[in-house]
Image 1 (tube, rainbow, N blue to C red):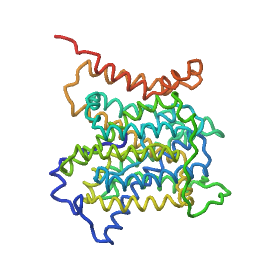
Image 2 (image 1 turned 30 degrees about the vertical axis):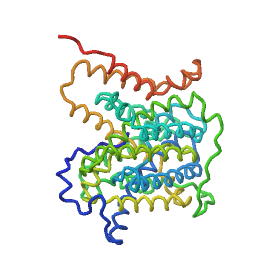
Image 3 (image 1 turned 180 degrees about the horizontal axis):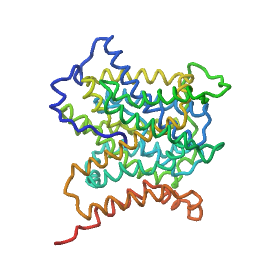
Length: 442
């Protein structure tokens, strides 16, 4: 689940596009426009990597290695989707909903979820190939989708709180001044995303990250380690070794629910951009999008990274830049891929302070909650039943996310991995209530 989906009507942009979907601008202009997409995709990759790196206690060097893989795979998937997948102007990136699955596991090896990514990728591809997706979507009513969007944000509050407050192994209590700076930076990002002119608005997160780093430097706070590791400028990461433990039921089952939520996100992104640009054969594009996303997630599993999804922020970018050319997006994705070939650049991106990454994530997740509320507002005519169906799963999932891992140790491992995952508990609960709780007869 990622960013709020734009609700502009097609007529508001189609007639004024500088470059339509299949247009190819001149080389010089293409490079300039592609760099805008590049600036947008960098924080999309960096922030989730920072969250996971913090949660799993990775060193800067380990986080850089992980981020390098994400940069390469995000560039690859975005370009492939634009070329042969949905053939739309949709940015791809790490799926926030899968972060919930990672964090619910309670630590361990960050590369230990490869089997879940491969399983999830195969599931998405199967939905695209067989057309089963349209049958499955009947389960995901506006109430269910809204709960999923809100629940992702609520589930990440515990780790987000620690990041924003500067809680580390050396400083487990955090510092009030760090939290104040984080909240102030998040507020600044929110204001910039609304009031900055032109294309600077969609890249407000990147601008906010730069401001946060500058403030840290101005305060004399250390950003980079005193002794930088010897990292090469150019290399390609190798696939990881996958063992039977990566396919244990206790790992796979929780991510099954996370991938169902990811599927809803993929549909929303494709439908949003397709309707905005008034494309034909949207159902076929959606099926191809699932096949491509599934294949990309399978590759993510082979390389040990978090799975990817199409982001729903892209229509907003197109409405601001008036450039819908998928060829420009492909070029931007190729630039991101080239950036990923440099471990040194990945290392530099990984130096973003924890509290700055936390502030950026706070702004992103705040927008995501707003997206869930927007779905409910568009539905309208909410009843007392709707309040129960929406509120109870969010509260229950929130409680699960705050319980310590030690609480679940006494349970059997399969049951533990399911019930310690706030996304699993929340999705199951909202599906049961939405389709099992009948409205009161009058």
